[in-house]
Each structure stands twice: as C-alpha cells, then as structure tokens.
Image 1 (cartoon, rainbow, N blue to C red):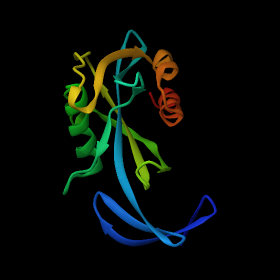
Image 2 (image 1 turned 45 degrees about the vertical axis):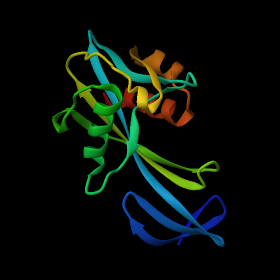
Image 3 (image 1 turned 30 degrees about the vertical axis):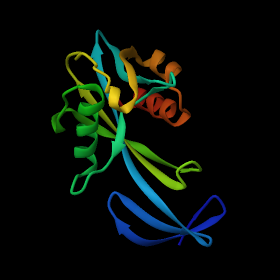
Length: 164
C-alpha cells in the first residue's frame, strides 16, 4: 500500500504505459510520461530548448510511452517529434527526477520522469504544430527558468544547474 495525499492507492493492473490504481472507492488510471531537458553549452553558458504552445505556455518536451519503449527511447522520440532536435543515447546525461500529480480534467494520476540530454551544437527548433506548439527557442538557463510555465519544470531546470 502506498500513501499519497491522505488517500490510499493500490496497484491493481499494469498495462504500459498506463497503470490502474485504486483511490478510495474509484479506479484511477495512472499515465507515465517522460520529459526531456535538452541543453547546449556554449562559452560556459547553458542553453535550454523550450517550446511555446497556443496558450502561451513555455514547456519542456514530453510525451507518453509507446508499447515496448524504454523511458529513454520515449523521450528521444518525443524530443524529435516535438522539436525536430536529433539526440541519441550518447547525449544522455542523467535522470533529473520525477513527479506525480492528479489531473482533475482527465481523472488520471500523472507520473512524469525527467531526463537530461546535452548536445554539442545548437540545432534549429521546429515546433510540432499538430501538438499545438507555435514556437521553440534556445534560452539561457536563467531565462528558461523564468519563462517555464509550470513549477515542476522550473524546479527541474534549477536542479540541472547542479548537474552540469
């Protein structure tokens, strides 16, 4: 049994990428996503790839696992799809962390795993319009922390300062 937010959860069925858990008397789906922070360091300055969506939210690329994918394979694919940045396993630096939250809109628990990648050269960011992204930029780390819309993403960006 796992205690979270004064509610009791129990794993009842695993089907990647979704895990079904019991929250009090209702079954709640848990969705696992992977987030990828891509950095490029030039002249000792750390730059981060961020995307802006149609709601003017600045975010780090992320997405859901597909069948038979590892977490690293998932985020490499998602980064390519959402930004058109080419990365590979050799660019992987470390796992930054993870966080969990409940989405009232989707009625699901969300588990987000965060990974850090470093590339040697800037690549053009081409935002994926089908995912409602309208802009993408390489921003200095401090600016990226300031622009990131969600606190969990700001925290992850702050954490990478200590990792690089």
